Length: 237
Image (cartoon, rainbow, N blue to C red; front, top):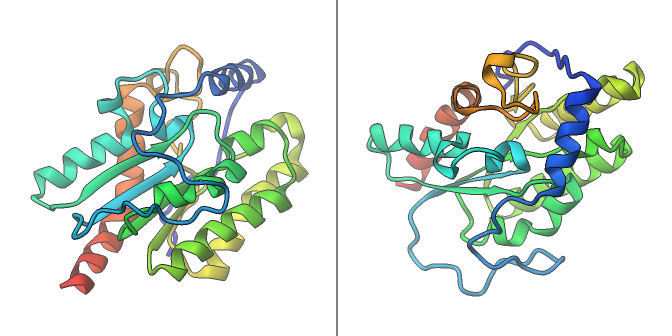
């Protein structure tokens, strides 16, 4: 299932530099201990935990530059509460993280085996011009490990900055479409659709969404998340 979006990422090099600098300033550390590189679930997982949704991402997920309550996962948490859906939202966004970093800390992010994991990694891979084969391998491993535990995955796509050329950008984009097709997971083609490049929706660095931009991102993610979450909740009854 693909949630429609315009695939355009008009990032100027100054904005790319701004994100690179922001990536070096880690967001607040996770409130739960991070497992080792093997990613085994923590032994202290809560019994009878509330159903949860984990957002595994980078600074765009963490809400760099915003109050934590204004990040797009927090906006979605408020929406769930409004709808009286008893679902916990876990923001596992870490500023500067790559797909490899996300894979390493997957054990913590998935320690309670959530109903759904929203996988929103790759922006920093693209900024650093890392090989798209590595991006594909890391994201595939995350999807497979989640599936082994019965966790539904929603894949949020990202666009590479233009300074690496059109060929790299095309290969980068194709990683997400190929994974969504291969694993039959819902795809959000571009997490920042309608937000990237819009001055009114971004902070001064030109790339991290402001509060209005985060609400727009939440709307994009919600389109994919709501039907999956409703189905998963139905299956747990």
